[in-house]
Amino acid sequence: MNKNRLLVIPFFLLNSVVIFAALFKGIQISLGYYPLIGLEKISLTNYQQVLSDPFFQKSLGYSCYLALTATFLSLLFGLAIAFLLLKVKSPWLHKIISLPISLPHIIVALMVMQLISQSGIISRGLFQIGVIDEINQFPLLIHDAGGIGIILVFLYKEIPYVAVTTLAILQQLQLGYIEVARNLGASKTRIFFTVILPMLQKTLITLFIILFCFTFASFEVPYLLGNPINQPVALTAYDLFTQADLTTRPQAFALNLVMSGICLAVSGSGLLISRLLPGGRKKSC
Image (cartoon, rainbow, N blue to C red; front, side):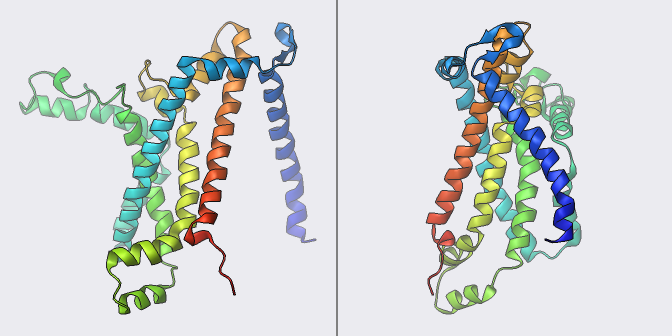
């Protein structure tokens, strides 16, 4: 066995023990076995409660809305910027677009709050030049029911990530296929959908899974910019976990495991769809 692989084994075992111990404990508590507060009967009651609760169902729908909106828009604009970077050979442009990747989400959330809130820089600037008569005439983009501020934070972070990742793949594509299609009279649209997109398919599916799972389970951005009426699933689980009544804690664990199950289901479905699409089919000899 390779010596480098042997050196990795202790690290792998230590992390595996921690992860699986935490997972086992979470499943145990979610099933109602929590001796600390006198619960020793195993059942699926906590899962039934959170799945049948209208507030949880609303939170689930809201989380899906935020995740799908941010993910699809990030893939769309990120792919467009990747093609722009492929044509415009400017190192400075590449560095500027890559800059948001290094910023933490919480910093970006605070930046967006200072920029587009009703008391932010833009609203005060518009008030000073007379575009609006009062600051509260500026549209509500933070703590709004539609989660516009939350989505803007995710777009600011994820579009550059998609662009840089996709650009690396575009630079390695076999351009001979594109030249053949062009010589055969294929239009740019046809070349994109029949040649380029299948080549990028696996990368785009992987990016979709990463971005969806992250935004779906995101906590800090909705916590800072969200509306109390529309709460994503992560905030609902946090509220259940931090209540003084410890009997709600098993429901919080059940909710977290439901979130994990949804992310696993989306990941599995994405990989399956990727294998069924043209870009994922194995070529027969």
